[in-house]
Structure formats: C-alpha cells, structure tokens
Image (cartoon, rainbow over all chains, first blue to last red; front, side, top):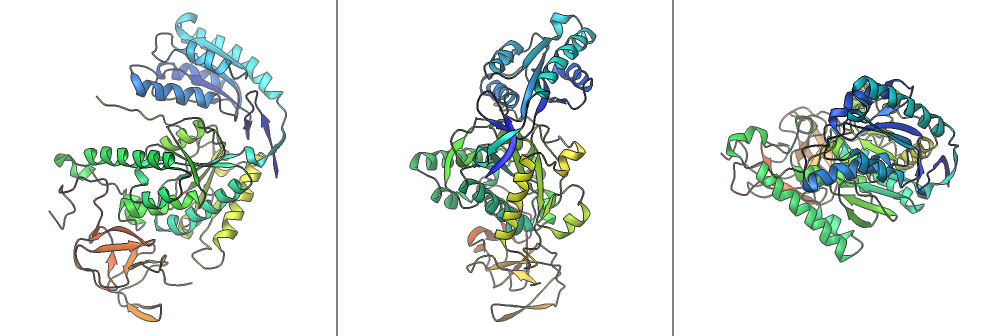
Length: 389
Length: 98
C-alpha cells in the first residue's frame, strides 16, 4: 500500500514539504518570525527555551530542536541564533548539515542588529525555499509512516469510542509494517498491569514500569503540598464535566488509543523512533508537550482524540481530530475531522470507524489537509523543561 | 440507542449514553434499575450497591474506591469515588474525608 510523499536524504519519508525558520534561543524569536513572514508558506517554530539551562534540561531542548529541524516533513531549515546562547546555533547548524537537507544560519550579534539579521536571513531563506520547492512527490510505502497517538480534553466517550477507534487504525497501520507511538506518562497510572502484558520483552517491561513509577513519585510530591490542595487535582474541569472521576479511569481510556499491538520499546522525550511497530514515549501529560515529543521522535501525522473539543494543531505535522462525543462534533464540525459517536449509537463498529480513520491517514499522508492545518492551528508546539532547582 | 453502556462484565458501574433523569428506569442484563438522581451523559451510574472503601470497577479494572456508601442507581463521581494513585497515601483525600 502506497502514499505520495517526499524522500529525504537520510532515508526517512515526509508527508509535507515545509520550510522552517527555527530560533536556537527564545531571544531570536521576533527576528525569526519576521524573516519567516517575508516568504509565503514558511513556518516559524518560536519557543521559550535555549539559554540559562543545564544538564538534561538543556540536552532535552537541544534534542527536540535538532530532531524537529531534521523531521522528514521539513524540506529545509533556516536557523536564527542570537550568538551568546547556551544551545549553540553553530552546534545546531552542524547537526542539521549532517542530514543533507538545505540548511543555513544567521546570527543576530554577527550581523549587527535585528534589521540586518532580518535582511540576511530573508536572502538565505529565499535560497532554501527555492531548493525545497524543487522536491518532487514520490510513491512511498505505507510502512514508512509513523503516527503519533494523542488525546486532549478527554471525556467518557474518548475511552469507549474515539480512543478504541484510533487503536484499531494504529493496529491496521502496524499490520502493514508501519509504526505508532503513544505517550503521556501521567496518564498511564493504573494501566501498568495491562501494558506490561503487552511488552515484547523483560527489558521493555522494566523500562515501562520505571517510567510509571518515576512519574507517580513526581506527581505525589507535586500534589502533597498542604497549602496547594486546590491546585492538586489530577482531573481537569473538562474531564470532571465529561464524567471522568479518577486518574486511573482516564488512563484506562487513554491506552485504548494504542490498540492491541505489542509494545516494542520505551523512548525518551523526543528520541528518534527506530524500528517498526508500537512504541511508548515518556512525556508529560500536557498534550502540546507530548505531541512535540512524538513529532520530534519522527511521527509524521498525529491522531488526536478529543471529548470536550480542542481546536489545536502542530506546525509541521498534520493533526487529525477525532471525537466520540456527538454534541462536541455538532459544535466543532469545522475543527474536528472524524466523529466516532456512531459507535455509542450502535450504528457502526470499532472496526468500521478504525478503517475510516486509517483511510483518512492515507489521504492526509498524500497531501489532503486536516481541519487544524487549514486554519493554521499550531498551538501544540511546546518544549517542556526538566527542572530540579 | 441504549441508555447505558457496561464496558466489561465485571464492572459495577455503567456509562450513561444520554442524560438520565431521577426516577427513570432502564434495563440492563435482565434487571430493571431505577436512577436515584439526574445523571449527565458520559457520567457513571452504580449497577450494584458499593460499600464504603470497596472498589469501583470500570473497563474490568479498579478505577478507585467508594469514599461513602453507594447505592444501586446512584451517580458515581468525585463526591463518592477516589483513587490514591498520584497522591501520597495519608494526605488530604477529598472533601468527604477531611
């Protein structure tokens, strides 16, 4: 089974052919944004990190930015540095250069000021844009697809309609040799017994348990401050109104997205997905942060279920929105791509809905735009911090 | 369309597939249950009596325990159901237990 996409010099395959401008530090955000605005269709990945960071926190930022720039949906990259930041724009540039795609850099302190950096950056960007526009779509096997499985604004219908339908779609892709990744470690508490039975070997089982135990210890500390008990709820207002009462109930619905496939590995945040099949990535429960991690890991398309209804998207990967709540679909038809509520009405089976989702994944892989893409929704790009001080 | 969905045969709660009013009756597994309070769609209803401190089961798994006695037909939510997961044991639980 094939789709039409882009072959990249490192062998990976993209479903989009995007040119990005990426600041190496938040101080370069405005210059980067203004450069990107000068050429139609260029995406600027503004963020809030890149300096005054240390250890695993800085490493995670570096890994995320490098892996997003190297993402197969990205055809070319302009890096905008300030010049004195801890995440070196020179390191960033040489990492991207290794992968063989068009890349240039502009450093604000070398150029003089914002205006001169914008002029130089725009000239470089024009060159990159032309090269990337010459890339041709080619036939690509569906087994080269990696989908990220995400949920946000969960309600009770996510766990019985939207998530299990996504699980079927994920299992179908894996049956064709493709891959899927799920995440959100805070939303696995209580589901470990079920997940451990699905791990391919003892090592993966141990990694999974380590991730869940670590996450639970961190949550216990965060929720135990007696002065902050009004800030210690693990269930959001929307989850509450949607009928979700406990973090375990949420977890059991959440893991339905991962279907029934074997778990082949447990990955760090933004770690490159190697191999095929189903993977778990250790990410926060924040849907933007976890989506950022999975896209940086290599997911080209995100399947995002929502009960309460969220309009969000990701700047370099199409996000397909799926709900199980018929009222949410009626209200948010312009944001949501697929309504799975026929399952609770008894009119369609999970297999029917999962197949429908898989068919849309194939079309989106070949270029059909999702509703989030058409509106330019890009809110999900968020790089998390790891702070111990 | 059914009134409620019981996900797993071992569950002691079911999900309301549309909003149910106090006093409404519905059939589940050859039993007729009466609803004790208004229940919003998506929310849980007790299928059996659930004693204080015993498990609430959904998806065939323990999702928490009853913080007070729950009767068949009651709405089951954060006022009568709690999970220790992610919270230090012995810390403040919910308003009913403080």
